[in-house]
Length: 141
Image (cartoon, rainbow, N blue to C red; front, side, top):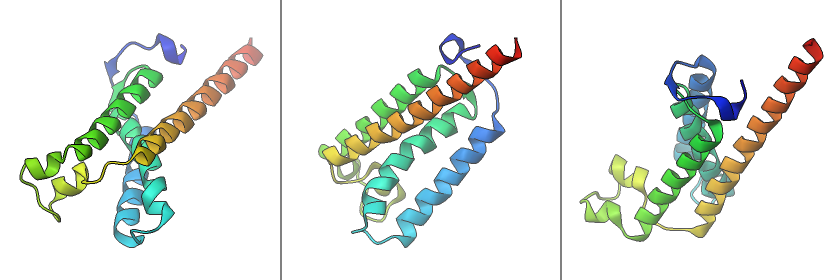
């Protein structure tokens, strides 16, 4: 069955759960151990967060990979645009609150580009996986 033929269903994927956990641990380390001025925190964290979201959702829900990546990108952009409108402050969160950190406070087109890059790289890995699976099936025939 190809990626595009999958119908939505619930099911646990240990591999995706471990990927999500690893990405989460990396995000926490980036947030707590890497200086604010570092490119790792400023860019790599934003690339990694879409991988984290994709893996977390896919660990429990089987949907079309590319539809899920699009949904993750839209969600990430929604959070980014919430920063533009100061949603965290409007909801009463203050610097230091967990939700203030999750929502963030500074809009950046660079962050949107990083989300797109993260989704694009994930899509590339998925396409390569599908090509390898297809080649293996063809060779087995």
